[in-house]
Length: 148
Image (cartoon, rainbow, N blue to C red):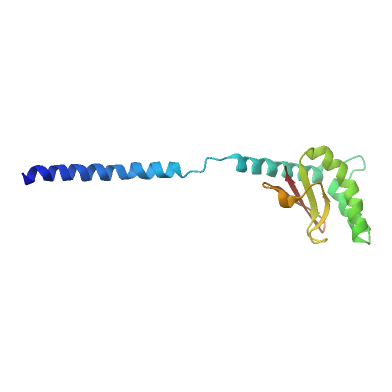
């Protein structure tokens, strides 16, 4: 009688040990985050910010200056920081409105002006996903934020 029971115990133990990898696999799949919306939006905003900053750094208008060249020249020519920022805002506003469209944006200079905002059309503190691009021209380092 004891010999018959031993075979059942080995069979039960073998099945239980065989189910452990299956249980681990099921728990792993159940804990996987399937919500891709945030990462997709982050990638989309990042690409929009990078593309816009790249255009601002390379595209030359009729006077053969890029937008960042114009802004840097304006900031360095004005003695007063507020006047320079206001002139830079007037230069960048039409371009950003035309390029970014209905998205929110914020452009700031983080080196010489120590993070001063040049132009913005929304509150970045309320944004959930933000794309960021950084470009340098001369002594000025520009940071562009884009969000919805």
